[in-house]
Length: 202
Image 1: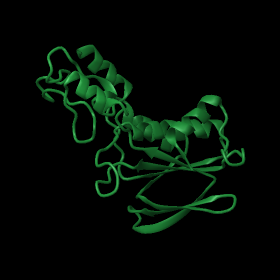
Image 2: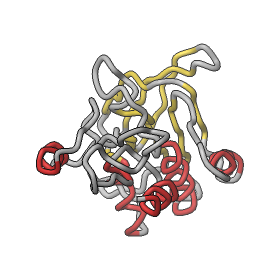
Image 3: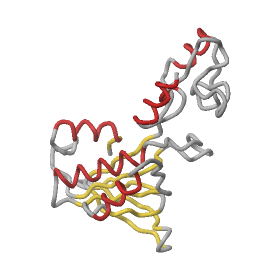
Image 4: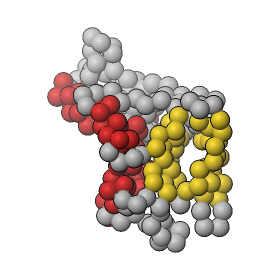
């Protein structure tokens, strides 16, 4: 079981190999919203960027391991942006990524493989998927130093620990302290185009 940043490192190296034994995984399962959208046990917010990077990673995996199979467990797909929904559809249609609507309840480790227990809410049944590797799309968190920096600059942070803007519509890049501006993932998880636009506004 790895997180999405660890899997990204594998893609960057050009080889997808299990950390445990170095084997090339033939079946990979992505678990969306791991640690987010769960107010009872984890973080209540949606990390916003996960749906797109999971589609990218699953497609890239199929390019590197064409005989492999990719599965994605998701609650819902939040692909907001120009061409984003088409990108997710391309992962399904062009690369054969199997999307399963439902949450994962457990990952059971066997000697040489994993068993991912989940639910397919569209089919209305529970299922178990055998996998060589599971990738967790973890919640995006504020930087560890955000609280300290907020105190130094006298700017406010929200209940999740991200920097707050003065007003979401009227002053979206200003903080309540004059001359201090907020941009990018310091305010909330954002993709690159949104971050660039906000930085330009600042």
